[in-house]
Image (cartoon, rainbow, N blue to C red; front, side, top):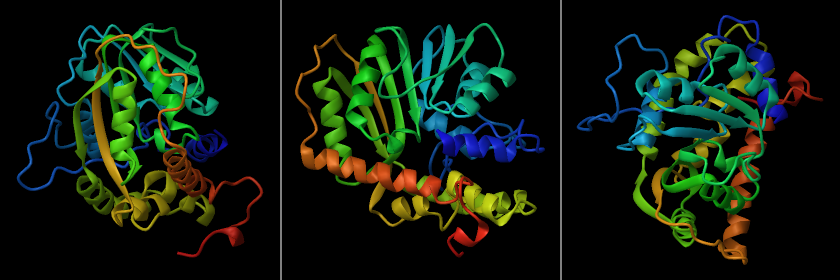
Length: 298
């Protein structure tokens, strides 16, 4: 949580504060592909980030639905959901108090709820959500199975999980099997690594220019949070060790979750290794106790 609070502190009071809604890597539509979701105007800011959310949503109906996002960050995804859909309400959960404070300040409305909470122990009643969104957050969780169990718990029967993240290449199928054991039907699963790499490559120069006046330490911090070309997380999925995947899954029935773990010990170890990589990448440039001399060279 302190890493994301560092990010909020970096941009707080800068011209970027009110505009930095999205923290995801983005999705670039490649030649021959048809973009999913609403058509965005030419001048729409953060178009690639919005397109990643649309890709994650797919054909999921949202009008009239209760939409929860776990790992909501600075609220961009839920802002976009309400912009294009007549949802019943939205709720954003994030472990970083600074992010939740920002959301509550910039999106203070009766149909938008915000709360600090742990993804592995959600402060939500069972069956309260029709849609649960999780974008580029799960990779940092120490125990991804606990999160998936919690996600299934808070979804109503017929509700849908919309998941997008960097996943180790040999864990994609185990994650899908885990969800199926928990009563979910996998409706769609896609590898969008090429689209995410294209988005990062195209936006890298522009984002580096945006933070050109920041300190070297803050620039390095933003490079990791933004997944710029050459950052640790970018190298992980661009090189093939990890894949960037989206999963849409529907809760088909109330199923008593198995008491025993579903992922094997080896699979849990691989998942924790991914979490370690993600967390380390996001703390390489944490300002607590570091000087510019501590930063990795470019």
